[in-house]
Image (cartoon, rainbow, N blue to C red; front, side):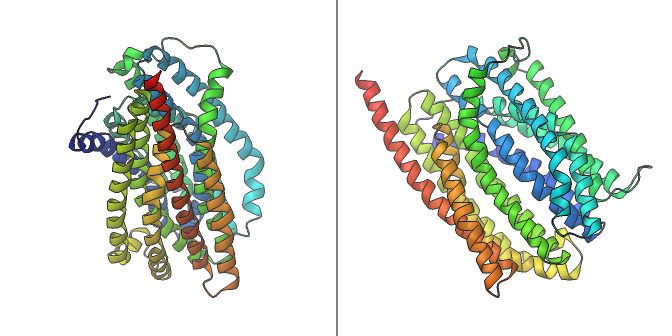
Length: 456
């Protein structure tokens, strides 16, 4: 990693890491975006079915794949400490863990999918679509998780443009497959929302294969000889990955699952409300890719600086990332406010869904500012390998504060479905405050540790 001295150099270098990550995240999210918007063009039952399916899948995927994000700070600190020979060993162990996690997801789904869907009180056709969507998606879980590990390895080296290239290559593939399977083109039967799951699963295989080939063939990745030696399973290495990864995964799960829980609680309302809520949440999540990308970039640069014992530079990068997120998220909030009708029309042409989606988007504005603080701080803390307190804060802010507040407002005030959104905003704000305090504590602790290191 390049050492930056001046503030201008840090901004330029950080931006060079950040921009490809942002494009990659937007690209990956676009797959879910395409699933939702294109399914909604078939029928609102397809939109609702994919919404329910996504609400079950996204927290499971992001939470468990979040465990694999530990590869980024582990590799980043190894590179920063010039321990390059240890990198392939840890990446291979990460791949082993990814396969075990994938099989675990499939096994759990076999036993829980039917009971969950049948007890939600949904319309029969919506249940059929949601179930079919998830079953189709399950065939792409293993390659998706393998890709996640290899992406963490590539990103940790600072070559985020490579993962951007992979994602941009896969987008037209995903769009074309969605077009074929959702609408029934080129002799394929029209599958509606279920076809979105088929398309995404096939796309995951394409992404994994492209990434494996790049890791083997292209410099500087082939120098690490990732696939030259398949090391035996090391539970000690798994322990290191899981020690950092499980709190990261749980933290992400608590955040994403509360959105899923709200969508599931929305099942007590009609299909119009479910579809409108999902459209608004989907767009808010799309914009969340900005602070999330900054978070991932911070994990890389802070991890490198901490590994190289450049504690002051790690601190400067942290505040640089937070400031950038606040500015960009403010612009996102303005975009939502002024272009609500245009945003809603992306998802549906149904007049009832169109009107209600615009109302939900007003509340989405407040997500942006809380996320602008919380997400980058989480990324910086991961760079420091500080993850346990973050996990506890996520649990408290989202599930002890956010969901109960939302339930009370939705159940006992005239706000109805909007009450859940106010609860979500409350949880996000509480998380932002707690994480800010934690970052200040960790930075002071690292400064003291570095001072002792210099004196010994």
